[in-house]
Structure formats: structure tokens, C-alpha cells
Length: 548
Image 1 (tube, one colour):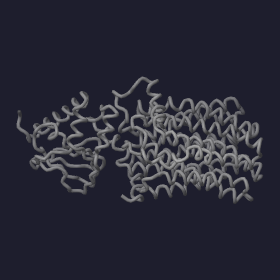
Image 2 (cartoon, rainbow, N blue to C red; image 1 turned 120 degrees about the vertical axis):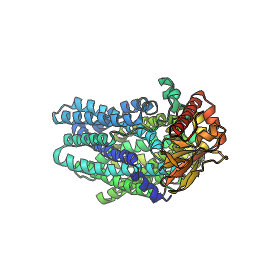
Image 3 (tube, helix red, strand yellow; image 1 turned 30 degrees about the vertical axis):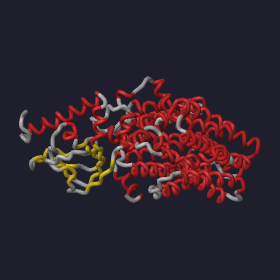
Image 4 (cartoon, helix red, strand yellow; image 1 turned 180 degrees about the vertical axis):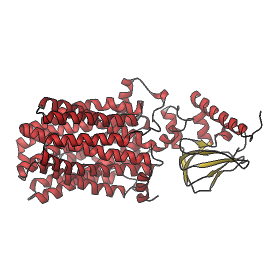
């Protein structure tokens, strides 16, 4: 499949399209609120006040993120996603009202509540995505598309904040952000988490569950480095939020609306980078975009210090946005490949917590750098962070792709099938690694009735297949089910012919891997026997199989 077709497949998948659409609205809401609240705080007490309210929002969010993200593995990530959007909308509406009534203490309170609710979105989405796509290429396309949408949301937020705050004030900007969050919740309403990446029998006590993400990262050197890159990147982003306000008001001498327009330039660069990333989905090695994104971000950030005009600053901020998106999308995609699937939500909760912590640190550093080195010197100081991390990491940066082998999409597919749902995570991963993709055109015969060489089970990832016995149509099978288990679990020939009803993608599992997975655990053995009994009962009811 070409990269362009893979991206088109994202929008052809209705649940995935709703996730992406809701995320676009969420990003617009998040950044509109962030810019509006920072400008409101700057009006109250300068860059120190802006930094203080940023930290006040980010520290509770950083602490809450791992706790909230555990629900993405323990409960439905779809419910967590929609609930988080609803909480953000309510908190931002209250903050807007408080700003309009000149109640600064309440603005702080509701801004903190909104920022804490934001941490539900990305972990829930990261846990949800593997169950909505059909192959690894689709997961790459989804991540690239979300990265592009992320930047597009920043553009929309910059325009919204610039226009609304410039014309009607910061309370109107915060209210607009609340409306966008509410729209995101409506867009995502009705999504179903098919499947959860954690089986009911795998759910540990909450304390142990929270530690699972930390342990998974601690024992994985590349994952630790990726989290380090993510954290430092968000330190820079947190500082940049403050520095854009300083750039607009102190360096360029433009009005407060330009804080939004500068963020728009930053977002436009990210949109361009997101499109480039989406068209490079065939690249298996992600080290190149990670290193390239970090270099572009650092060089452009340092160059802002000597920008001679508003136009030059706008162009450099676009480059900063492009570098940030390349780095963020690539590191998140690689984390999804190398982290065990059963702790995916918790690891991304840790990522979200570190993201918020990084933003808080950046918001704290920026005013200090402005005070110590001046506005231009602050940009230079932030530009040095990623190169310093690269120097410390050394050759590890070049070896990031070596452990990118966790089959998260295949695990999600097996988890959608009742027969495999109760498998412990390690056993499920072993079975997922044995899956082999098989593409079918409409009319292709997958299984022939009477065949005695029954060596494979087939899990349907997309499309549908028809099951026919003795010329009689028995069933039509789609995603969330499979075919071929009867002849593997009983000493019989194939009981029906299975033909592709449409273009389809199935994954084959060889006899040995199937039997080890299914018969190695009491719960899966019982589930498999139940499926076989139901199949035989259905054939008898249709008169296609003699009574025993």
C-alpha cells in the first residue's frame, strides 16, 4: 500500500475519522485556551504572572496524568476520551465567566481544572488507536495524520486567539476554547473501544498498574531516551509559549494579538511538516526524522535571537513548528512500536505527565532567562537544550530503531476476538508475533470445504468473508471474528468453504502457534470450545451437519 493510500485509509475508517476530527477540535481548544489565559495573566502581572499561572496549571496536570491514564488500560479509553472533553468544556466555560466578572482567583481555579482534564486525551487516544487500524502501516498513517491535525489545530487556535482576544478580550478567547472542547466531545460521542488492550484477568492492583508504565520504560533504554527527548521538547514548547508573548510585546513591539499570530506561524510550519511525515510512511527507520526534527527546532530557535524583523521571526517560528512536529510524531510512533502493548496507556500517561512537567519547567525557565539574559538571550538558551541531550546520549540516538518490534496492531486485532480476549498479555504478544498478513480480492477462496490440510487459523482485520457449506450460505464474518478453528481443534477436515465477500485483509496463525495460545490457558480453552460448539450447533440447526 502506498503512503498516500494509507493516509486516505485513515479518513475512510469512520471511527478513526471521528477520533481525528475530535482531536483537531481539542487541539484548537487547548491552544486557544492556553494563549488566552497566558495573555490574561500577562495583563495582570507581566511575564512573571504568565509563568506562574502556566506552572499552576501544569503541575497538577503532570501529577494527575499517570493516575488518569491507568483508566485507558483498565477501563474504556473511548469513555475516558469523551469524558475528558466534557470536563475541559465545563471548566473553560467557568473560567471564561470568572474572567468576565473580574474574579482572578476563580480564573486560576478553573484554568487548573481544565488543564488537569486535558491529560486524559492523548493517553486515551494512544490506547484506542491500535484497535481502530488494521495493519502497522495504518497505525503509522494515523500517527502522521494526527501530527498534521495537531499542527492544524495550532494554526486554528492562533487565528482564533488573535482575532477573538484582539477584538473582544481574553474572556471571549477562553469561552471560544470551551466551545471547541464541547464540540470535540460531541464529535467523539458514541465511539467504542474495540478492543481494550488489557484483558480482565490481567488487571493488577492500581499501585502495581501505575508502576507498570515506569517499569516498562526503566528497563528499555531506547524508551528512556525517547521520553527524554519528549520531555526536553516540551520544556522548549513551554518556554516558547511565554517567549512568544515576550517576542510580540518587547522585541517586535507589536500588540497582544500578535502572540496569537506568532503561534499561527508556528502551527503552519507544523502543518507542512505533518504533511511531509504523512508522505514518508514507508520509511521504517525513524531515527532520521527524530534527529532532523531536533536539529531544525534547535537551529531555528537560536536564530530567532537575531531575527531582524517580524517577517523573519514568523518564518523562523514556522521552522520551529516543523521541527517540533517531526520530533514529536516520530518519537510517539516509535514508542508505540517498542513499548509492550498491555502497558501502552500507562506509558503514554507517563509521557503526558512528563509533557506537562516539561511545559511547567519551560514556563518557569523562560521568565528567569528573560530576566538574566534578556529576551533574545532567552531564545539562545532554550536552543541549546536538545544539543546538550544529544551530547549526553551519544550513539544511543542512532540506535533507537533496533527494538521497534512490538506488534501493537496485531495484538489489538487478537484482543477483538472473544477466543483470545482473556489471554495474558505476554501470551497474546507471542501469538501476535506469529501472525502473517494475507490480502484477499473479492471472490478469492481462503478455505476449501473438505480440505484435510488444516494448518492455519485466520483472523479478519478488514473486509468480510462468506462461509458456505454444501452450497448453503452459513455466515458472513468480519473484524472481531475469525475462521478455521474447527479443523484445528477437532480431528476433522475443513467443514466449509470461506470466500472473500469483498477485498479483505486477514492474518493467518499457524496450527502450532494457535494451539499453544488457545490450549495453554484454561480461560481461552473454554472460550475456544464454546466457539466450536456454537459453530457445530449452527450447522446442525441449518441441517448441514448430522446430529451426533
